[in-house]
Image 1 (cartoon, helix red, strand yellow):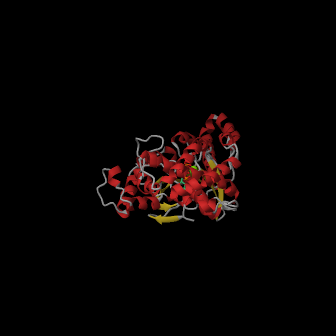
Image 2 (cartoon, helix red, strand yellow; image 1 turned 90 degrees about the vertical axis):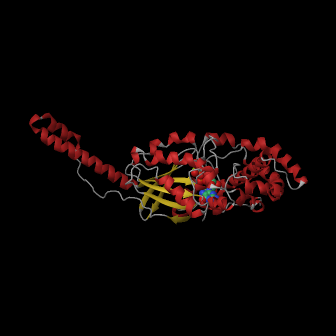
Image 3 (cartoon, helix red, strand yellow; image 1 turned 180 degrees about the vertical axis):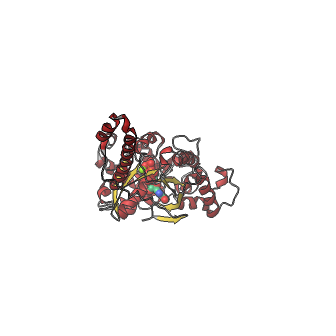
Amino acid sequence: MELSTATESGVPETSSHRVDQNPGPLLTAQFANNRSDQKKAKAVSDAIDRSLKADKERQQREGGIKLLILGPSETGKTTVLKQLKLLYGTQGLDAERQTYRRVVHLNVMKAIQALVEGLQRTNTPLQRAENLEHLEVMSRLEPTLKRYSITSIGAINPAVARKITDAKAETDMFLEMVPAIKALWEDAGIQAVYNTATQINVQDSAKYFLDAVDRIAEPEYVPTDDDILQARVRTLAVSEHIFNIDNVAYRIFDVGGQKSFRKYWAPYFDDVNAVIFMTALSAYDQPCEEDPKLNRLQECLALFNEIANHKLFTSTSMILFLNKIDVFQRKLDAGSLVSKHFPEYRGANDYFSTTVFFQYQFLQQCKDLQKQVYTHFTHATVS
Ligand SMILES: Nc1nc2c(ncn2[C@@H]2O[C@H](COP(=O)(O)OP(=O)(O)OP(=O)(O)O)[C@@H](O)[C@H]2O)c(=O)[nH]1
Ligand SMILES: [Mg+2]
């Protein structure tokens, strides 16, 4: 992963204080029964409180450092987790490699489908008339494709079992679509939609996968680490992952970022050492999927406001990843104006000025001026 560091990041060390003897509640009761010894009882009670606190700290220390990866959907939370698996996991991404074969197939089909939708919505003509028959193939397969959806990898999820009924049928469908996918992706009409229509909801990895269709369609195709980093699977449930880094256990939680899944985050907010808050800078010109009237980055700022000022995170380190800087740069290069979506921005439309502006927008959300927010500009799909 490429990190461009604005400030140094860090996770606080837990206290090394240890209380070995816990007086226990029985002792307190004995003292409390004797009125003249109330002072002593209070002292013991305080000792118990201190002891419980120390126990909690020890538990936390022995249970590892707890880190949450939070942020809206599609900002790269699971991608960061994959990077951690590559860096610190015992088997990298091998455990999920086979499952990702199907994910990649689906990603390719959904990418071309989104581009075809964009073509139709923007009334862009195809360059080659003979490609019209491929549009027909696409629309014929669309209802079937809608039924296929992988929403979590490795997790037992009844919804997944219902949706993915037949992996072979899915692969056959992909292979049947390959000629249409290739011809359409090479068509100048589709390329124009990809290059200019930033408003269409096509995934960031579309070009990566569509350029690689021949390799992906090979019978022995096995996804590479890069393929897995680029692949998109919506996270539904909160999942916990344990990494041992320099003999310290890190318990890292990945959550589903869509609005409807955020209600499941709160039970994990206790005793958190650090929060990595993910945001996709490239979303500055995109509407929210759940609420198209809302700008994605505005919605992300509001969510960061909630998290950074949450009462359970007063002493939690806040690490802010301003992610997808590659896509962000590409949009600026294509002439997409930040001021069109953030009218209060009056500066130049270059990378440096705009990133300073966005960083300030995020830091401004934090009401506690003493709170350190460690900021990084990231490109999470670089291996
Ligand atoms: N180009 C580019 N793509 C990225 C970057 N980070 C993540 N992606 C891609 O963005 C897509 C979404 O990433 P995820 O990690 O699944 O997003 P998420 O935040 O976990 O989303 P939810 O699970 O829905 O909450 C994937 O296809 C990733 O490969 C980046 O820095 N640059
Ligand atoms: Mg995810």
